[in-house]
Each structure stands twice: as structure tokens, then as C-alpha cells.
Length: 156
Image 1 (cartoon, rainbow, N blue to C red):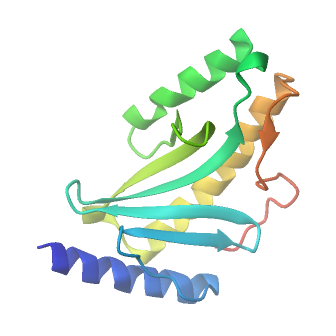
Image 2 (tube, rainbow, N blue to C red):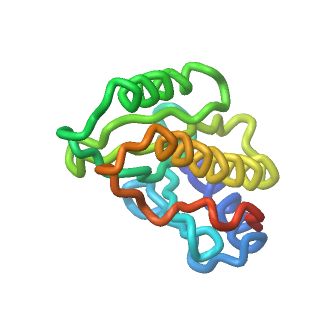
């Protein structure tokens, strides 16, 4: 069963890469695939054979504990619950890098090249909007990754 899903995912990634003009897109030995969409938006995919899903994830920002406000914390904690809603990104703190990481689970049973492409585009747009929300609460001590709102027209 693992080999069947693994082969399906590899084929799916190959077709996705062809559409998005990406090169060398495949899973490594840990089930990870790292991408940069439009030379601007870094994200990774993780295949889990146990849960039969792919998870998209990307670093949002680095946390400075001394500058956390109640408003910022409320935004983060509210967003953390998004993953309980089907097809909504969640957020969590990476234990080693002290970064906020956005993630989106994709069910393999429903995944096609079209739905993967749409999910990646949605995930990137969601991150842009989330970072805008984070910036709007004016937390100057949070440093952001290179996901910006400069170009909303993405070809994925």
C-alpha cells in the first residue's frame, strides 16, 4: 500500500512541477519535498503514509517572546484552531527554530493535480493575508520570511 501511494504522489508531484515550471520535484527519504513557487514563496510538502495525507507547510515568522502582545497571541491561538475546519490552514510553533509555521493537510483520497495546484495557491494567498493581519496589530519585533504581499497574481 505504501508503494502505491508513494508512486501516486511522485506522479502527482511530477505533473504539478510541469505545470508550475518547477524542476526536480520529488520526495526525499523523509517524505519531504521543498519548493519555491514563483521564485518567491518557499513551502514544503510532507507525505505521511500513516495518515494518507500530504501536509503543506511554511515558516511565517520568528517569535520574539519579549514582544508578544495579547492581540498577537489571540490571533495566533485563534488561527491554531483553523485546522479543525476541513481545508483550512493551521499554525503552530516549531520547537527548534522558534518560528510560527503554517500548515495545511490534504487528503490523498481526494488529491488531484488540479486540487494540489489550487491548494498551493490558496495556501500562499492565506499566508499573505495572515502576515498582513499580523502586521496590522503592529508587532514590530516579529521578523518575517520572504512571503510578501507585493505580488498577488501568482501562477502556480
